[in-house]
Length: 354
Ligand SMILES: NC(=O)c1ccc[n+]([C@@H]2O[C@H](COP(=O)([O-])OP(=O)(O)OC[C@H]3O[C@@H](n4cnc5c(N)ncnc54)[C@H](O)[C@@H]3O)[C@@H](O)[C@H]2O)c1
Ligand SMILES: [Zn+2]
Image (cartoon, rainbow, N blue to C red; front, side, top):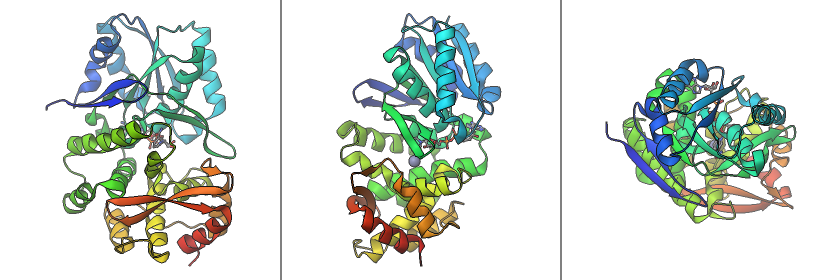
């Protein structure tokens, strides 16, 4: 299968390589970017490392790169300040220097944690993303947002720090559970709703087939948005479609509801709000809800609008008394809609109160 490469030109320029079997050639790809690299640190979780750790170590070895390993428990709870501090102490104890590279082998949790560690260890070292979930492939591994969660909410401590390379091997998705796969499909549908009606209709007609082509499309959309607004001042906020609601849902569920699933509920809510406020040119709600359900994603949650609103108030996107919501004009055309905290309560009522 041909290798697909998406070039990202942000504050750092790097390639996103999408190719079956690429994980077995990770050492080669990394060596092309860092010809004199001697030491790397693989950061992974206890699901992913047993599956793919040896393959990565082997290819690094073949390319004369020595690798240390730091493996954390799987799940959102590892995107945590204590785990971050353990990782930083591990790097320091092992005298990892500026010439070394961190390798994030795993899903979005590992990517966000490793990226944040890379951004602040020795005031910044390079890192490579090896996404092993579809969600990380289409979204979190590209664009340089890194973070850990704080008690008050998701992603409240983080940095913009671009990777130097992204190696995406779609064969690693064969070991994902159907619900993990659905999480990634949710973020892919998101790109369709934001700005690519053709992608949306393709998923609607054919399901999530031709995965590599779709990953390339999603990554290209994210690349274009990140290149025009790397630091989230304007257009990049569009990528938060469904996320203000979604983060609140994740928080209320104590992270039992996974990110992609929460975003699916959030996108359905955004469609409902867009309709009820008469801001949409077509009625997107039923169509979006039915596609997400067809894709085995949830579109409703058991929490009251008050609970969700309280959870949303601690979201980082609350800037003074304004919050940027993403609403849907029509499928393929979403827009930023600023509301006050007070109006937000009414919006949560519209979305979840009725
Ligand atoms: N930085 C960004 O721009 C950005 C964008 C979107 C999401 N995110 C973040 O990403 C996180 C969600 O990412 P995720 O859904 O990848 O979660 P995750 O990293 O927790 O992975 C999901 C689960 O799948 C397991 N897993 C990973 N790869 C596997 C494989 N190939 N085979 C079998 N099991 C595997 C993991 O161990 C984990 O249990 C959230 O914290 C979210 O906030 C960040
Ligand atoms: Zn997301």
